[in-house]
Length: 117
Image 1 (cartoon, one colour):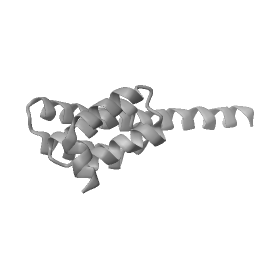
Image 2 (cartoon, helix red, strand yellow; image 1 turned 45 degrees about the horizontal axis):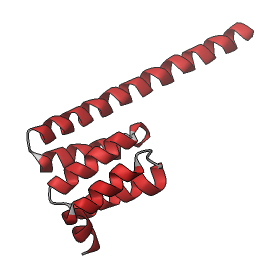
Image 3 (cartoon, one colour; image 1 turned 180 degrees about the horizontal axis):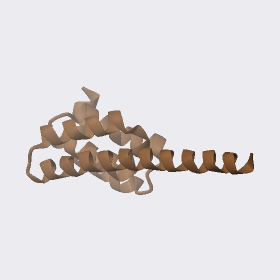
């Protein structure tokens, strides 16, 4: 009985690790594509990639990706989504580099003005 239980536990761990790894790879690929589009100055498409990544792989999202997505949204002329991401980053994620986020949000009047409109 102990061998059967041990086998089931090991099988479960292998399956969950494999599934999590596949999700992490897909998320990383979408974020990589978004950054590539951003570097190519195709901000609207980059924003769409971030949106897909965040919607499909919520558990993999990290604070750096949220910040980068906020910058992409700002450059894509979508200040409301940009501000929402920065607000989420500052209040819910507890991003460690709070002053960097605040300085960039305030220095870019498009983000602040667009979010308040």
